[in-house]
Length: 142
Image (cartoon, rainbow, N blue to C red; front, side, top):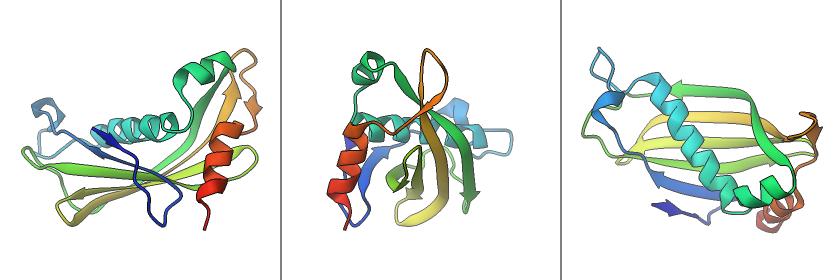
């Protein structure tokens, strides 16, 4: 279930993040690669709330990641019910930054930040942030 969250953060999304039996590593905790998948799910939901995949394809553009940073605070285990939150924290001419947190109940279990840009799919060269996204960001700025 995707929910667009309005708060002091700018463009926001919140998702339930299911823990599957195959997500658990030999130590009995959610594998670090699962957090990457969760961030992907959050980022797709976040961008799609303002700018659909079909619009991106029509404009021959796509978002790409330049950097991902995750800080693991507490392990997540099978039967935990994590919630992920992501928000657009910065936006410049070519680059954007999203920040995220993953919680189990009220406990913060991980934080993350991703930096990315949009590229032209034909040329593979960076392009400016689409107006659909930059306008949504500006409308929510305090």
